[in-house]
Amino acid sequence: MYVPKAFGMAESDLHAFLEAQPSAHLVTVGPDGVPDATLLPIVVEGDRVLGHLGRKNGQWERIVPGSPGLVVVTGADAYISPSWYAAKAEHGRVVPTWNYSEVHLRGAVTVHDDPDWVLDVVTRLTERHEAHREGRWHVADAPEKYLRGQLLGIVGVEVVVESVEGKAKLGQNRSDADRVGAVAGLRAEPGVLPGVVADAMEKALEH
Image (cartoon, rainbow, N blue to C red):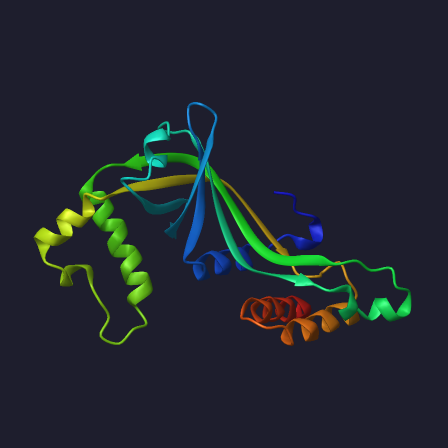
């Protein structure tokens, strides 16, 4: 990933970003050189990324044990109009861009076709997403026989992370006036994502 110095994520921001994102794309390459990608829920635990794939998804069968993989974790993204910049009125030398945050984790991939291993990951994922709910659902709430049958339909995947790159492209290369204008423009846009990007830009302005 190309990461200009202005857009590099601080380590603390990188960890917070990973904790906030519930899913990622797992990209691997089969023996024939053809790439595969699947969006899957993940748990990042130290230097490991844990998740699972559907058994009918052929990607897991094409993963050579220990082969390199890429986990792409994306945040909100949004179009930035040059009409929002103060610089447009000053000299007009402005063009559109796209703001976003993303983290890439690379490392060796291992498939775990083991129901007990997969049960542990499913339990971690469930606890992560149910923790804030009243009357939350627990894996143990399902009948044991039914649960074991469902586990046979998925396989586990583990990426042992060897490198991490984080990029937060939030207008840090623009003047404060341009950034404030872009935040205001995003706030007026429809949908949820522009507002999320505006929040991230405001936080970056504070640093």
